[in-house]
Length: 151
Image (cartoon, rainbow, N blue to C red; front, side, top):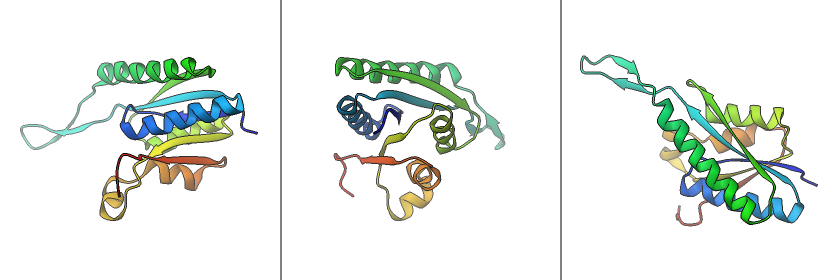
């Protein structure tokens, strides 16, 4: 059925719920699992004169990404799941675009990702990469809601 499962992770509690579900499903289907970490290197910050500067925290973000991916791979391997990982970088593109690009190029036949399940003004202000992936993706997407939060 599903042979290649893509699981975007960012180290948050919500993405960890998605990661655990991806590991369980990959194990039950004997599927290959790929963890994806997206780094957005663009951070507009207002300087002392009130103008916007761009701050690049690339080393910190890469180290965090490597740590998150290593933890995900370790959990998958402990469960007996074949997993690899990839970091992709962008400057200002939506995370959802990079997830969709990876799903197409790898190619994934299922995406599993955590979602905050935001509603109302939170969803409008923050946006939803998960929603964008669902709307634009050509393969099935399984969204795993953070069961620790009540909405």
